[in-house]
Image (tube, rainbow, N blue to C red; front, side):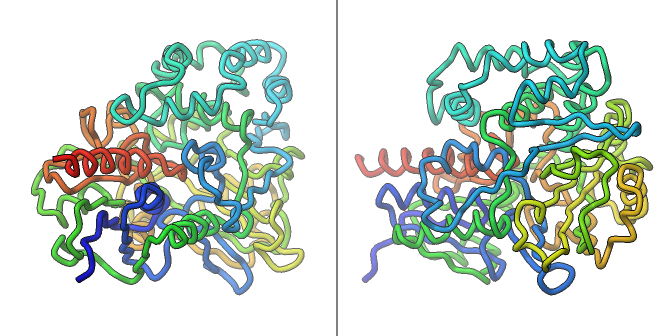
Length: 474
């Protein structure tokens, strides 16, 4: 008779696969069950528009992937993961045809903000340069999973990062710096005035200077495929096309880890109203484009940037985020766009390009933001629409249908605002545990939250490992 499985993981996104790898590395017998026909979750690559155009349906650019403390301990390069760096990590164009930039160089970034704010930015970043590996590990772990290696550095980052972005914004004189930093905060799709929003902006800025904002060769699927291949070599098993509706659907195991929304976990594991207080936030409205040529940006910096933020003022960005979070679709949306084929020609036929863009809308919104988004792109890239060969449009209902973790189209798997930005999925020192002693949450609904970094899976796996080890000693 076969021995009992040590751990079953539900969901083969980056966090589920990371949790499975971490447990398999410790010699445990692990099996993963994924409802879709391929692994990946929010890190997939598909031909969404025309043959030969390879798009990322969700995440595309990965500052927290290349900077992930747990990915850094894995031989993922051996399994085909190769990071490609654009000439510029990010550009933020303005109506006058110029752009602020987030460069690998702090000096170049500071200079793009103008003379009054260059020194301010350099002083803001300086204390943390050269400390990414320790700071990221300390910041993305919890005291219950790993004691800080540099508590003083973490406290210093907390002093800058815990206040709302409005506090950070007051340090800058001109709106060039304010708008670029506001755009960085907006990556968590929440209003700018919330607790710890300064920390979000700082984290993304530091990541660019320390690690870059790269794209994986071949698309985001490469991250998921590398994790799955490594897991296979460790003896782990992945079952795809297997939808789990209740715990009884799964084989007996000592622990069950869920890379799912808290809502799905409660339903499958029979935990009733355990997560009724957990809220879902504003949604994404995403368009993937097949283009006949590169985006015709007016600002030369945007033509070589992997990511382009579109929001010409901090006020405009703040208004768009507040509207989306309070139930109104913004007329002038803030956009995050990515240009994968600038650094990876394999993503599109020769001379053609893929382009990726999303704005923010209310959770569950059923309208069409396409025209408003394209007006914004045309504002900074006149003639853009003439380059469009095809578009694949996904509003909140389509995003939720594509990935069950995106409840109402919330790609952060839960509002990243207020206390829920820091204390996910609820106020607890042990956010990965549930009231069922064998059931754990390992998705981005638990700290440290959204992003393709695997740290929610890593932290949950540590909690499971410790529990199983204690159980084994009894």
